[in-house]
Image (tube, rainbow, N blue to C red; front, side, top):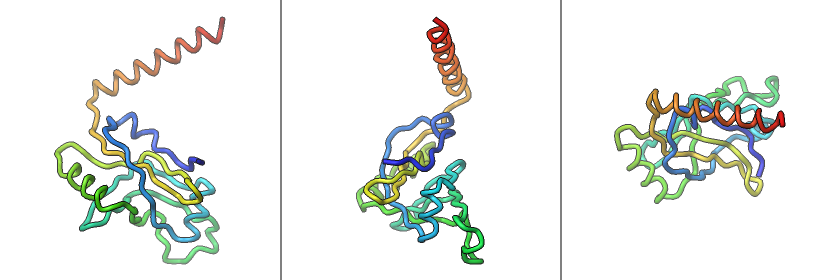
Length: 148
């Protein structure tokens, strides 16, 4: 399982409640770009329209810019491949106030590209400060253990 991109800001800005694995509908040259690591998940989210889920705000840069079609939009909306049960669960969670759906990572599984999406709740400022303190504490402990 190779990870192509991660959304590191998601764990800092949000409290992850539930994770779901989803397939993604890509064009052929987009698959090459993803495998080359030309993906940005920062600032993206998932919306549900009708009975389909769409990944919005993900930028997939062209693999070979000279060979891509002229009308190609790198940040177009991409459809996620989910079961009806998963779509219903996501739709219900999105209806709750304060919850949103965010992509966490993009990786390969059995030669297919998958997206790990999560139902999240936004952190308050004091929660973010607390996570910064924990992170700094871990770094300090690692430094002291390394110097011994």
